Amino acid sequence: MLKFDKHLLNIQYRMNPCISLFPNTQFYGRKILDGSNVLSPSYNKDYTCLPFGSYTFINVTDGREDKEGTGNSRRNMVEVAVVLHLIHTIFKC
Image (tube, rainbow, N blue to C red; front, side):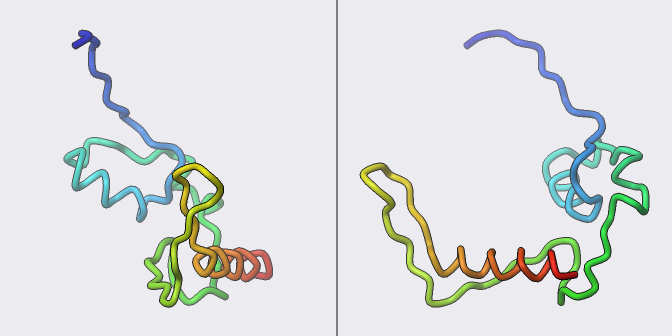
């Protein structure tokens, strides 16, 4: 095995703090700080038109995975339709 020094990220600059909280707590012992940019009010958009907060889990029923082409990639067109609907809803907010 190659010997490389480990370097842990100190500050994260991309995720909403309520999203970063889970991995930070579960995997990093809350050692990662949120950057000032993600803590500013202008970073967090208010999508009050949506029925959920910064993140959610959506149970998509009746979808089926199928293979795409000759490779190992799979797709679920019902899930694609749900994502497209959500994107259109967000852009209308």
